[in-house]
Length: 77
Length: 400
Image (cartoon, rainbow over all chains, first blue to last red; front, side, top):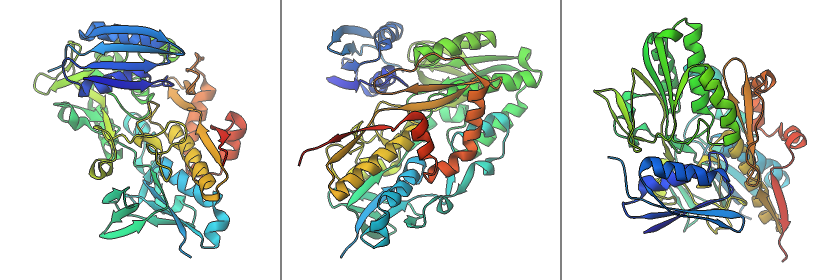
């Protein structure tokens, strides 16, 4: 299942909040597609995916925003 | 002629400001009996939530941060001090106390609820200042007894007032120093973000101060569960933190009424247009404040500005002016850093927060705000805010 998260225009608390909210409700194997305008989103999501053991599938500059796709391959207890 | 009815559900910052603004914008209509503004508040008292920080970390008296809701409303607002049982959007009705009230316009200002119970062990193991004045007071009592060991301030998302966890850890550090216990207490700050504050420009100010004050930062720490026996908190990223005292900002959820009425998403946030404040594609239902699903701060200033936008849009629709008011996404949240210094986190949908120097003046502005809040709810300060900050909306005109 692909879950779309539109966090364009969000700078505080920012796109990572929206991504993690969705991640907590997602199932293993789901993909989360995050749209963001916050330039910090690219490095934030990459760092978080690496640390949490989830997979960064796509990171793309679109016109005026970024598209970032994370696949859920690890969840907590 | 049956009067047109605007019904507001929720007596917090957004609902109170909106009801007052509504009767002001529809003054001639309400005085001639052509329109009515109703507000439902499930408590007789209105609490200034940021005061919970002062109660929990400065030992201030809870009563100084609450007032009777009735005293804050324009006398033309019809106040119902009762809980709403169900909101029926299909039939445009509110059900309460076995009664039914029809609406022409509905505003949902139902807020958010701090829910430590949604994470295993968190409620049992932690002290909270987001769960009400009484819990904030208990946090102060526990802090007053705490004299040595590991103290963890733990943030969970989503939560209201983005600055509050950072403010909490700085105030705790200051308190321990003032009590001469700083060398006996290790202080940790755990946050889900990649840095101490989500906005990089603000984190650039916060992180060096944390280092200077010996506050150890654990970033990218999203709570998985708390082991209440081992007194350890575990993150979904695979880390653990031991604690002797745990102070948390719990994850928040939408209000019960949203779940009961089935008008929100899985966490109880209501789908809202980020500019017009309209519910989904509806033209008679609006949502303001913490209750929305908009990815913006859940804070008093946002509730305030969204309430103004929603009130203007309802008025425009009422009189058929064709004007659509669009919220700019402006936020302006004070962040206290201890040592009588603060910064303001300011942004819009288009502009991220910028770096600024902590100052005593900003701290004094924050402290002063607590006393002018009650007047602000009545809308009396809006002309001043408009002068200083500009309007919180853009206007577009729709051709008929």
